Length: 559
Image (cartoon, rainbow, N blue to C red):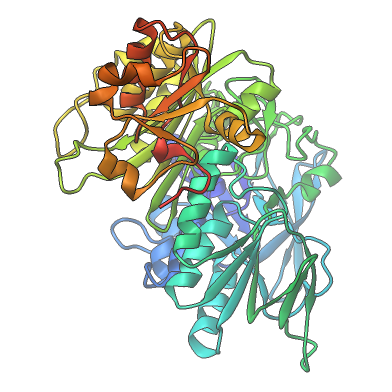
């Protein structure tokens, strides 16, 4: 069996290694345009910052062996032709036309089965000046090495990042770490569009506190020069010009499907290569995996383009098993994602509230802040979490977590729950581990599920911060009741509030009007919830609880 694989970064090497394990006599060849194989693309920002010390660390095994052509030949029994570009697929002849870039020589390579693992390329917006020499994308080892060298050898004071997805925010941290003044320009109203706006807002506030200048709802119009026309000196926006010694384009990636399109393989609605759940393309002898292919959203069944290294490796394995005669399915993705943004863990899975509403789900949400370990443990750190569920069935639809605490653990639990079709009731009763160094007795995700259940059952009438803010802006006449202690109130306050501590509430009920809406809150709205129950028991009929309390208020606070 002769298998030809085009692409040698993630899905391709994974497929190659698995094929040889299953069929030791298979003849497997990887064609790779670049010279670096099986490297950790997600580690590039940490290489730029210096956290990853050596370039070779990005392409080494845990034992320290560099995954180069010799490694694949000697250890995996896989032939690698790096520096070789695939030009054309002859499907009828089952061969691929390639060119050796160093010499210009070309050849035809035959196959019994072909695997396309051509990945994705950075989107370069049509901005005047993008061709200048100090404009980069952080997408591959050569670009990361060039950026790292420039930072070490040239005077780079001001850096501008255009785009605010995963690569953008991770690169911002890397550039701040090496001493740059960093400005991030984003055309959308928020960064990290994978999050709901208020969750993204907490990340924005954290980045600003770390020294990043964030310009959302702002478009980069041109990259301008001074005396040296080959070098960017400023980035022009609608409002101002921003000094720039270095510009990073981080506006997203696009699937590399030109080779597939020329071969008349079917392209999906997302612009990526269409495959079935066995990773087979419209040609039964051609498989595809990784960032070049279209996935299926496991919740909605709709096509999705979500390029991630984790997905690429799983898909490469599935393709290999089926190539070797097995019957393995790739069921799709939930968009489970995590990234580090300075001191914040930012993670999500499933549907955001915005996405769920656009899909016309009738939903219930709960915003729940809290420490990831008992508050008395010195290593406890906060997590701000938002859970989304279907109102009638209680089916878990999504979870977002941001903050310095361990949000990835909770998002992984949620991804498992969504995959299993679990409800809020199921999630609230999971038998999760508990010990003070690791978690609370009632883990954050269980608390989030319980808050959502209370709202689902009508026990708690929550109101999101956005709705309260709109009331305040409109000058509506309602009571915004802070039930924290006077000391907490003195440290940080929300606007236009009435302070009655929870312990004094029963004695001071006469101070509150029965004919007005009352919105209660505390730091996390646990005491807010308890105060709402007291008020309802005393005959107050229009009582609601601010979702997430002061901790999840995304607007300015008074101090």
